[in-house]
Image 1 (tube, helix red, strand yellow):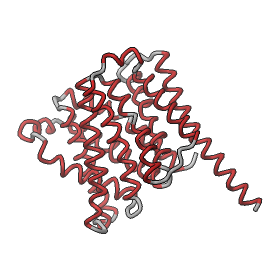
Image 2 (tube, helix red, strand yellow; image 1 turned 30 degrees about the vertical axis):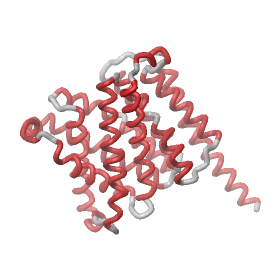
Image 3 (tube, rainbow, N blue to C red; image 1 turned 120 degrees about the vertical axis):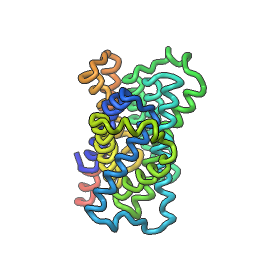
Image 4 (cartoon, one colour; image 1 turned 60 degrees about the vertical axis):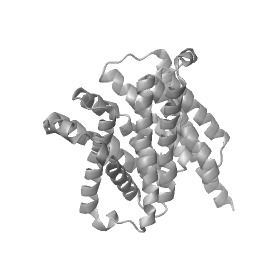
Length: 303
């Protein structure tokens, strides 16, 4: 397995750990959007400190107009998809909201076809179908539940999938000028500044004085956020956006395993089939890419 694909999978796996941090922060009395703000701000601070120690000049935009890319990744993606997802959870259920979130790869593949002229191959179609089917099975979404959905929850759920997809799209443009670390840093800086007026400091800041709450807030900023996005964005720099988004669907598999072994949630045979579909799609994309590279190398050697 080549390094970019491994980094994409590792980044997505770290995203899968977010539930562990979020559940503990909910126990302290934080609301979903307050947790999003904590996630964005803690990761932004960590990234700024790291960038200053590495090379302060990397925190400068090459052109002020480039901020539009990071408004895309920070506001249109990070903030927008979190807001839509949490609203979908309020209107329906967590499994349904999660399933609709993972329509993201479909949006990426379609948008990439028009913007980046990435070919929509038969392998991508099969892998995309497997990931969507697998995600639905893992989170427990079945045709029998469709009648219980209201139109608003579907719209917000699809909105979360679109917002999730937009990170890959906007990152493709920004990676032409900036490194993966810069893209991740600027994304969360812009998102943090945007969310600044919306956090109830007088009511909730005292909760962060608790060492345990602070641990979960900082941990949320490091593992499933800063480090995860750095790894994913680096891999995206050398991988097609549509392929990267398909590989990133390893996230619900990790989230399911955490639910089973840490929170002792039940795991059905249907969920096992879903996990098999997602892992199978990852293997198909990886094996197809490897065979394609080998074929090209052999063709060049023959010529």
